[in-house]
Amino acid sequence: MIDKTCADPVAAIQPIGDGASVMVGGFGTSGIPYGLLNALAEKGARDLTIISNNAGEGEAGIAALLKLGLVAKVICSYPRTPGSVWFERRYKAGEVALEVMPQGTLAERMRAAGSGLGGFFTPTGYGTKLAEGKETRVIGGRGYVFEPPLSADFALIRGETGDRWGNLSYHATARNFNPVMAMAARHSIAEVRQVSTEPLHPERVVTPGIFIASLCEYAVRP
Amino acid sequence: MNRRSDAEMAARVAQDIPDGAYVNLGIGKPTHVAAHLPMGREVLYQSENGLLGVGPPPEPGREDRELIDASKRMVTAVPGAAYFDQCDSFAMMRGGHIDIAVLGAYQVAETGDLANWATLEDRHPPAVGGAMDLVAGVPTILILMNHVGKDGSLRLLERCTYPLTGLGVVSRVYTDLAVLDIAPEGFRLVELTSGNSLAEVQALTGAKIHV
Image (tube, rainbow over all chains, first blue to last red):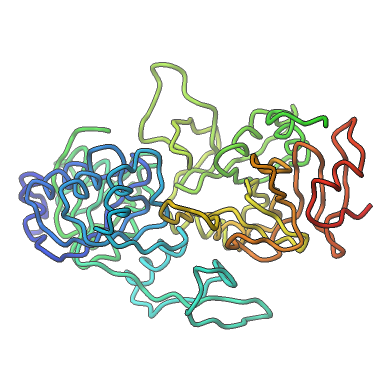
């Protein structure tokens, strides 16, 4: 029998240890797996590489990991959200490394990893500072930049409803990076507002359970 | 000098958005364009975080903190709207499916080069977001910006001095002083804000304005 449900976020994040690379779903404060991040902060795994669109804001979520000094590197597209005080503080003190890339490139690199592709050529960033040192090619008269796949040891996913097979549905714009991170990481952990005892209707499934290693309930909405 | 206000600039841009267009509005001043769309036109606004069909802010009591736009403000979804993930969102942009993007800028060059993601004296961490993806794939890039910087620096130039977002991507620039097209010869005058002379606006522009 397949049952990927876990008792709670603390149990779900147990496999994450020091030095892990962790993708974290969300955009702004929508679709962020706060329950899993709180549990990770409490566990205190160190030297983490966090891959997310933003670099946390306020005191919770990724910001809590930064505050506790658990993050060695952030890979993201937009770390400068108002309220990203903990990232800014650690960055200015030289305590956290930063790698920035265009948002669509970040998403597509994850899709490449999750899809078994060796990378792709994108027009995004061609001729700019962010393409310096990268392989380029002219295709059909247009310049493109090569981008390699981006995987991670873990992904932390926020869904709306999940079932024991790991199938997930999402709510509104909380979907954002969650589905692509679920497929890109080697071990994807989901928190959902509700674990359904009934199987999700196949038409409602956005993330098929094959991409999810485990899931737990965390009912709190942001 | 007579200057258009932010609302007047947004209203001017809105006049140029045709019925049925799919439009991405950048954060800041461009977000005001939606409120000035002429009556009788239906436009679907895309937000990079995964919403096509951005509506006005929610009424009190109907807020949903998981329904936000790219500026991280709570919004609503209009009839005909769709939610999608980041890969689909950026496929819409890079794949040429979005018709128009309205963006802010630090600098625009007469060649259509755009600089809107980093300055030279930036003390903050670099942040690019979706700007480079938008200009890579959206065929019409409209820029809404103040003609001159707060410190008096010229922002419409022969060449940008700040790091570029994209090369040769801008179609038209709307400022508080003028509307200018990017043409093969450079900046071409579309209109002056009423009451200003071409000589006055040219003096505040770092490249020749062609008439």
